[in-house]
Image (cartoon, rainbow, N blue to C red; front, side, top):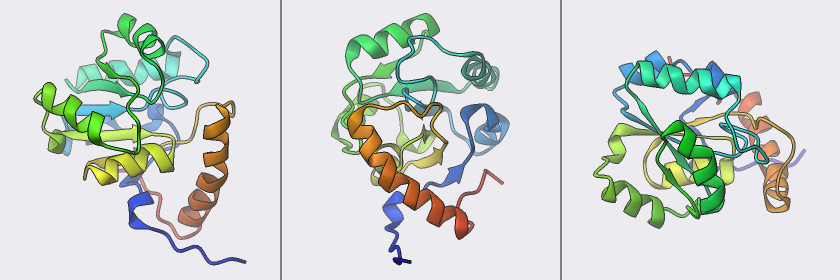
Length: 176
């Protein structure tokens, strides 16, 4: 078997199967005020324009603890607006993750300190890498559906190898 050399930029801070499993009270105890959350296959299926029951439960739990969720997506403005508007959720579309320039400008414009943020996403090579580049704590979740855009599907092949390696080496853990 080929040995994997794992770059620390790919390692999430925490891991949960889905957003509904995340213990929001623990996020609050860690002092986070904002959750920067990927949209497609993290909060909802990439082909859906609405939040499901599980995602809504997570959003309601965040509101209960006064934690604001902000959608951070590489998808287009129309997609992000259509999803976020009914939830009164701020969003950044065309984020260009894993690159950090647009996200950094966005957070500065909102006067949000990145130390107050935690990033949730389903992709190692976009979401987790972006969070680590910005020195923001992260939570990796499993994708909600197996349906993906072609580029994402290609990334998932590499992603799967990394996840399997991290699992076998007990590197994927929830918040203590």
